[in-house]
Image (cartoon, rainbow over all chains, first blue to last red; front, side):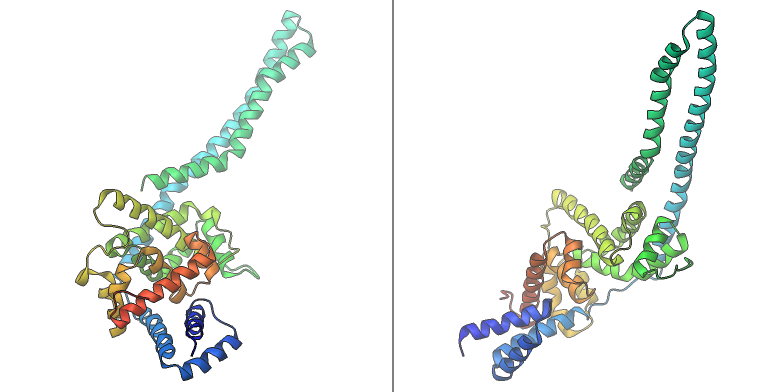
Length: 160
Length: 188
């Protein structure tokens, strides 16, 4: 037989083991290995190697999984307060921002009236120097929550 | 596992939901369910049994951190093994920098090999030395294909390599194992 025929047979054996071959290719291979002892031996060795992989059994300490479960539960307990505190901090910051803004608005309005500053002027100044920075800060806190959460997760990972 | 299944929810979706909710009972079940397979995978990758046991725990802690990344659109195993792999490779690289052993060699030869200890048949004993001599990437490919029954695409996802590369690794690994069976140290 041509050497490329044997080469094709071995290639099909390898391919069949890894990703499968078409029924037509399987039929061709079967006919070939019926006639070629060497290629039949090659196929048999491949199958034996694959079956041998199934014959490895690693002994497991019965308590090993339990230890991992305990470590996982400990980590869950550790991280819950931090996340709750983070959420509480964000909510508190937003509430204080709104409440503080209302107080400052009233105070600024009162002072502006005493000093004769036109309403439009002090209101625009208030918007630029008080409200906008507060809104930006809240946006960072809200949309940055996930980033901060991931950062905490990275810190936890680094502390392993 | 306590998590209540929602209608028409696949298993991967159920896992993703439970991980995001950090359901402790469900995660306990996952740890139990995958413990042996994860340990086997990490042992194949590192060829060091003790290190593999440490890495199993680190893997689950990393799963907790990265729970938000798994959305249940694909099977859980490739995602889990990919996390384990990254940890193992980081550990191997650290050892390369500090130890005199080269990557891929068994931490101890002969009788201390975790593969020799785990071999339960004559053929398994014969290929245990060949397994120990293989580089981790070939052992990994063999395990994921023939014992975990992952598809080539899933193995490629775990290994971060193209499908053609994965196929080549499996074939090369098999060639080495054939050599081990034939008692030939220079495999085809």
